[in-house]
Length: 137
Image (cartoon, rainbow, N blue to C red; front, side, top):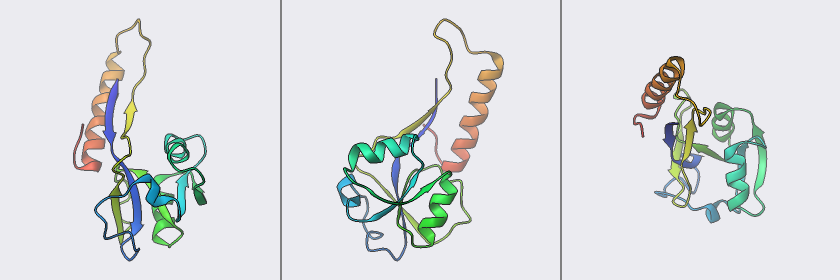
C-alpha cells in the first residue's frame, strides 16, 4: 500500500551554474560530478537508467550525506524531495522534469488484510512524511 510519494530532483549549491534553472532533465547531468545514493537503491538505479555514464564522485549511505557533500562542493545530489536535513543551508532543489516520483510503500501478502499495527504505522509514516515535505500525496 502506498504511503507517500515525492518527486525526484537535483540538489545544487546556490552558487552553482545550474541553480538558476527552474528544473533540469537527466541529460543536463551528463557532464557534472554526481553525489549519489549507494548502489542497490532506487535512486542509484534511476540514475543509471537515465544517464549512460554518470560521473559519480561520492556514493552515500544517507540523504543527509548527499546534501552535506553537495554543500561542500563535491557535485550534484540526486534525491527525492523528502526534506530531512533542514539544517543544511545554501542548497537549491531543482525538480527533474523527466523524473518519476519515488513512492514509499508498506508491503503485505495479497491474501491478507493489513493488521491494526500496519494501519497505525501507515498513518504515522504518512503524517511524518507530510510534515517533512510540506505536502503529502
